[in-house]
Image: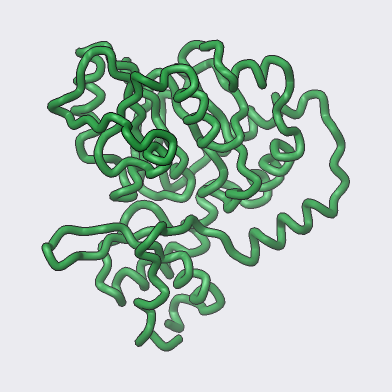
Length: 289
């Protein structure tokens, strides 16, 4: 493949998560299959999801056993919506967080490690979207939140499309974690995930699960994707191509398959999306590039 115009395929505005023909084909195939409403579907989905998370060969996470309250969510966006509905005025984020927070609240309070204060409720992404990795101040932030009695809720929607992430969720400051299959398995328009919580709060997610109003076809589809594609799907499929793209375009690799870091004129780095390049290269064995 001609590499002269590769840079034109980079996504510098709103990098997109991975999605390709294989995933699209599986969605079409599943819609053609018979879907039987299973009264134990929610239980099966939660168990399959937990095994899928812990089954990664490329990441090492621990501590989720400390979060026994588990509910189905329509992607991490519903998890965030629930937090805003229950705790909105107190929610804070740190700089360069997921832009959805500003879409919900253009005047959201932005904190730094130095300005966190008692009364805050912090939402923190892990992996962090600006760097495609654990935020470098995560341990310091969590410890300060523990010292100031600040509850922390972790957005882990990027977990599953990553490699070499090592993280223990069992920190006293962390009260809940949201996971999703959107970026992990290309289910952005059929989004489904799980909220792990230390203890229950009486918000919309809890009520929807208590009254069995979860979307059964999405849970069923999630089970099919996790079972058929397994953990680490994108990294195993495109990992070598990703390394080749970063090397060719002098990009700094991240731990998330769909973004890399591009150096700017002031020597800082900003995330760029590589999805279009990976899909273009997907038909080429890496050794032939």
